[in-house]
Length: 250
Image (cartoon, rainbow, N blue to C red; front, side, top):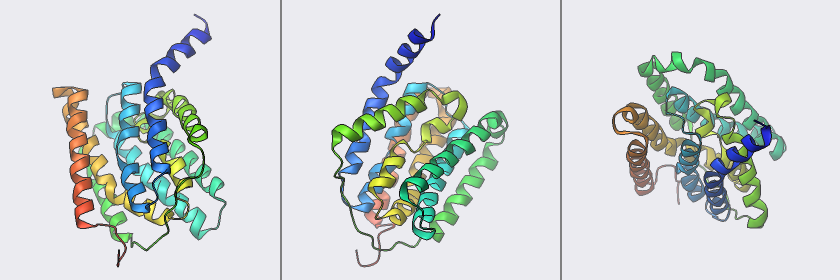
């Protein structure tokens, strides 16, 4: 069998998920509020698209991938705002760092799955430290001026390429910052808010991952995914109502 038919079938298989993701990223780009950008960014649309496109069962590497994407957002902020790196270089290096960490952890999936309590404890501890260390400050909003017909195809092509990398990234393929790469660019004037608010909101995605990890074998992937979405929305509602992460005076 030649390579061209294989590639064609792979592209057709991933095409719907990549198209949804492209529209999702474009939506983030045209929102002005930094906290609202972070809220939309945290919705598990990229996770859902990657999960459905790859068909890979959820396991511990999805959770370590989520922790790594939180690190991606903080890495972009620190390299850009604290070290003065060009934005493109900060995003590129942080994204490569994400791929490297997930690729290194992928062969250890069996070992990680064998000690779920330890993985959950480490993830919870890292989240508590991250939220405790984040101190929100007012930052300006920004709305994209890039035409949608430029942005959407770029995200579409990126998603198609990364969905094909599932064997390399394991569960990390579902949490790769597909939207994050572009959200970091569009939120370049509020990188601290983006990283901090994403850290707070990420608990909802962590609950989704844990629910799917525990329940997919009993009730199936689609049902556990639906329950997981419910946990994300409930957590997002709690964060929104309490104003968690909102700068003082806002």
